[in-house]
Image (tube, rainbow, N blue to C red; front, side, top):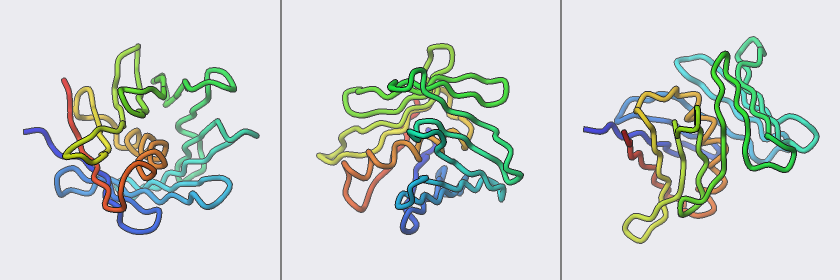
Length: 167
């Protein structure tokens, strides 16, 4: 049986990431501020997502000691593709239509994790696709942070976030 992973709204700008009934992370997004800061809590450890650079198209994820652990920079200043550096791991982050809006994280040209829109029972839902089912929770939080505006624009207030794992 494929475990159900989902983001559940728990308050204004607050979301819980659960696998079945187990809470894996919480995310607090301040979209009303100019810096669009977000705080991720995973196993009691806090991480912060900050948008940096003049155009706010660069991002950094810092730990509680304010050390940058993940950087996300566009390939070009006008690009819809980004390079993600997390320690020794390199990823590519892309926006694509598949057939609706989707953020996808790739490594070596292969999809690792994707958050996209799908339709189910005549409703638009968020569809989470993982290559192997054990993608790091912090990567889920980053994709949800990026995908959240698309999901809320295209869904009702009672948003449903589904996981469909693919091998």
